[in-house]
Image (cartoon, rainbow, N blue to C red):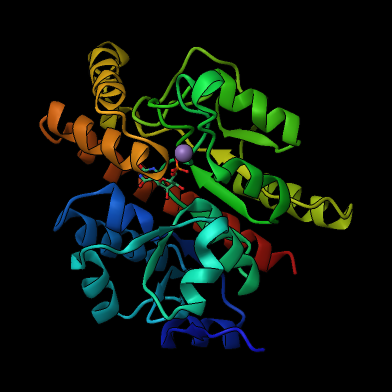
Length: 304
Ligand code: PSU
Ligand code: MN
């Protein structure tokens, strides 16, 4: 059986020319941001990657085909469609087999990137251990994926809606390198700083690329999580955010929101409660991550 995988014309050309490619997820488009900011952001993020001399590959499942890179029309269509599935490792294959449509989370995007030979992936935030995980067992499949799929993922830290200490403990258990770019303190998505020291710190894209390559040389399975702090000018102060996160979490508990619906519910409520400020910060940090991911991808090409 052959995998129904299509490369967009732009990604196809980049592969032939041996140019750097950066993977992008699509759940952030369908479940992470409202229309039309979702499609505008997706286009801007792709533009940032092109400006940095790399090629963007936004990943999704359309009509049962795994798309590595979306055309402008496909991106527009995905951003406005209702009822697109949110795909992780568990439901990825069934969606393709049934001929369905789906947006890829961090976990599914890593799987697709590896299948397509792409080593670097930029996103906003990864999934992790949710608050109350000790009773709900809600720990994102993104963490397991980082432990087994060899893609370097650039994010702005774990979302502050998560239990960051628990998320770090799980990543440590799984042997996933958590590398903060250019500072000792772990960033917290909407804020450039948290109160936690990062397990690892690297200061250049080249160092991150070399660590990725060294893992390969050592035969170590799994990816690297690069935490790139949101630019200070774009951050939301912890004091402003903390009560809002608490309220959103309380509402999720009261409404008994479960499983896959938790992250989209929290993001939507935080967007409403911050009058859109959370979205502006989210857009800024994704672009910032796309820039660093492009530099890392370029270093991996240079080193070949
Ligand atoms: N971060 C965002 N927006 C998002 C997500 C993360 O700012 O939409 C998505 C990513 O696709 C991530 C997923 O992989 O949420 C995690 O979902 P869960 O917690 O259900 O595993
Ligand atoms: Mn979950």
